[in-house]
Length: 88
Image: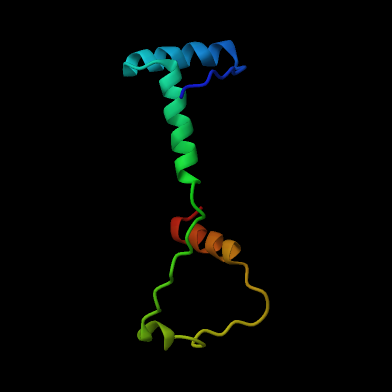
């Protein structure tokens, strides 16, 4: 069952949307309906938690091999390394 919907949008947006719909060979209503379907389809179900794969044993053996004293600012260290590498 179709139901009428009234939207208030900027005139320029409506004009561009109508032109786009015409180029796609569909009505503005079907364009909006399909967009709404897309939005609601993505959020229909609760996002499933991804199961993490166990880390390889060789990676786990590295635990504790790097020592660092004090605070470590990853972004700052990365910036320094890139500046050295590329002479910035």
